[in-house]
Length: 242
Ligand code: ZN
Image (cartoon, rainbow, N blue to C red; front, side):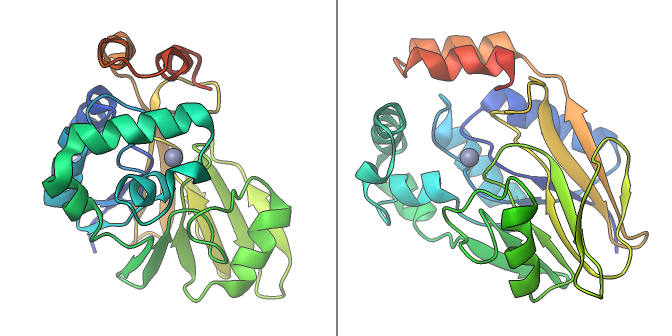
C-alpha cells in the first residue's frame, strides 16, 4: 500500500491547504485523508470543501462542519466561533452546506479508523493527554485510529498488556504492536505554538507515521480573514500558532 497523507482541521485556510498539498505531492504522495473541520474560522470554506471532497480518498466531518451543516446548533459554540460559523453558512450557501451535511464524523479505510475528536465521542471530546487517550484506546476497534480536533500533533500507544504511553512526534513513529491513536495536528490553525501547517505521512507498508510541518502564506490567510470581516482573533492567532 502506498503512503497516505493525513490532514485535519483545515478550517477554510486556503493558503495552508494549498501549501500542504504541494508538499504532499513533493513527497511523492498521491493519496490523502481528511479528519474533519474542513470549514469554520478561515476565509475560504467553499474552496476547502471543494478540494477535500474532490481530492481526499476519505473525508469525515468535524464539529465545525456539523454546526455549519445544521446538524448541531450554533449555540454549541462560544460567541466568536458562533459568529464564524454563521458567516461560513452564508459564505457556503445552501448547496455547499448540503454537500457538507453528507459527511459523517467517523470513517475507515484500509483497516484504519478515522474519527474527528475521540473514539468514545467522535464530535466533542478533546484528547489532550493520557487521561482521555486511554479510554479511547480501550474502545478502539482498529489497531490505528487517526483523530484531530485539538490542533496539536500527538501519538499514544496502548501495549498489548493494556499499559498506555504518550509517544514523541518529533521523530517518525514506528507503530509497534498494540493500538495507536494519532493526531496529525492542524493544517489551517495550528495550536502548538508553531505557525507552520501540520500534517502526517502514514506509510502502511513500513508501519510508520511521520509528522510534517509546511510553511505557508500566513499573512495572506490573515488578510483574507480580516477582509471577510471575521473576528480578528482568528487572524491574529495564525502567526502565533496558538
Ligand atoms: Zn478544529
